[in-house]
Structure formats: structure tokens, C-alpha cells
Amino acid sequence: MENRNPLKGVILAGGKGTRLGPLTLGVSKQLLPLFDKPMIYYPLATLMAAGIRQVCIIVNPHDLETFVSVLGNGSTFGISIVYKIQPEPEGIPQALSIAEEFIGGDDVVLVLGDNLLIGSGLGRSLRNISGLNGAHIFLYQVENPQDYGNVKINSEGKIEKIVEKPAQPFSKFAIPGLYFFANSAVEKSKKLKKSSRGEYEIVDLLNEYLVENTLTFTPLVRGTVWLDTGTPEDLFLAGEYVRIIQKRQGTQVACLEEISILNGWLKLKDLENSSMINQNSQYGKYLRSLIHDGLVFEPLVHNQSE
Image 1 (cartoon, helix red, strand yellow):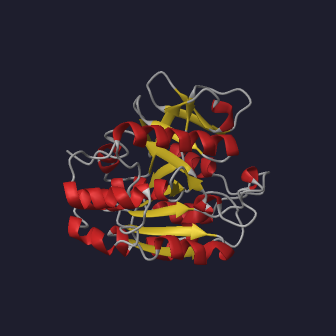
Image 2: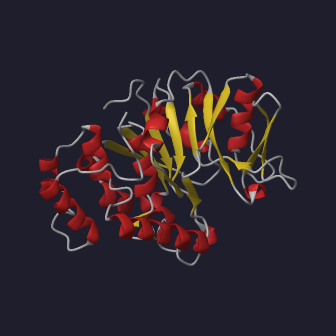
């Protein structure tokens, strides 16, 4: 089913991944394995589940060739992928100005390349966000809100304040790396000033919409899992989570071809053109099982039904 209000998607997959060193000395962290797939598959699956078919991936100059070899132009997955270069990592909002030509006059969804979101019904929830007049974020309850963008909710249930990594958090709610923006975010991102960290801060961009009273939010329901894979321990735990789900259910989390079929962008017969179809891997075997058995259940990572 096509999104009623089509958006474009941007994945920020640049950065140096210093917290994962020495793993990232020679490869982008978004190309590291998260169990049995490259990390980049997971944020791409999130965008596809939201009905987004046009995607821009922002990468480091020296990683471009490898990303293209892994994902190509997206046609294998029934989507379109273009790549833009991030010369130096200067903060999350920089992705919007880098992707300005790609975004054009459309609204945009920005997702961080090292974030994993899994939840039944998540795709449907994302598709329900339409008619953007400003920005829309998600809130997720965590044990360590001081490590993330943190929000203060007033007595009327509205966001009163957003602060990046506060010493004294206002609440247990953190902001995952998934942001819906009206097209105005491109120009706003270009006017931001760098913080004391020497970066353009996503919180500063969100606060502009907060001042304009055009920032809305959705609390992610219990059962939805958000994992940040920025450290070796986080990367291991996320991979183990995916392994357990796949082993228990016999499905694939973030199977891009399967999501595309559920969206009506590919047909089962199109899987025969996948480079993975003849691979002797669990992913290749899963694609062959889809051809043989058809789609019986929608994958847990994204429930596409209405």
C-alpha cells in the first residue's frame, strides 16, 4: 500500500564511529554486522516500512564505494537510493542541508544509520503521520535519559523543553534517532549555529519548532524496541536481540525484499533477481522460502496491515 502522503527519506550514515574503534578503523560502523545483516539494513527497513521509496544515504567519502556495492541503487529492494557525501561529521541537522537537492520541495524523514527500531505495528504508526506542519518526534522510555536528548512534558501533556544530555533529566523519555520534518527543516538547518561541541545540534532544530508550536510527538508503545548501536556492547546486545527473534520465530528482521513485497513494490518472482537468492546463508535461504511458501505472516519488525 502506498503512503497517502509520500515523504523522502534520509539516512545519516557518516561519522567516524570512534566509540566502536578499532572496529571502525577501516569500515563505516553502518556496514558492521548487526547479527546477520549490515547495520544499514535496519534504518533502511524503518523508512521502507513507513512507505518511503526514495532514499538518500549520507556517507563518508571513503565509504561510498562499499555502500554502493552493498545496496546499489536500491532497485533490488524495489526502491531508489542515491548517495551524498559528508566531508566532515558536523552534527545530525547537517544531513538535511547535504541532502537539500535530493529533498527538493518535499517533506522528509531523517533517521540515524546506527539506530534499530523493532515493533509490531510500527510501520502502520509511521504511515499515519501525515500533513506535517512542522516536526514530529518519538519518545521512548529509557533507564539512562541523561545520555540522550531529553524532554520535559508539562501538565497538559505537551513538550515544554528539550535538552541534549542533561545532567539532571526532566523525565525518563529520550528521543530516538527518527525525525519527521516539513520541508522548512532544510532552510532552518542551514541557519543553525554550532554548539560548544563544534556541531549543529538536532535539539536546536527541534527547539525552533517547539517555539513555533509546531512540534508534535508520539510515545512509542511498550513492546517497541529502540536500540542505539554506538558502542561495542550496544552493538552486541542489538545483534543478540535480532538473533533471538529470528531463531524463535523463523522470520527475518529487516528483510528489505520482504518489506518491499508487502508494500507492493516487488513481487515474489522478483526475488529471483536478488544477488542473495543463491547464497548459502540464512538470509538467502529465507528469500528462497518466501518464493516457495509465499508470505504467510508479516515480519515482526514492521506490520504493514491496516
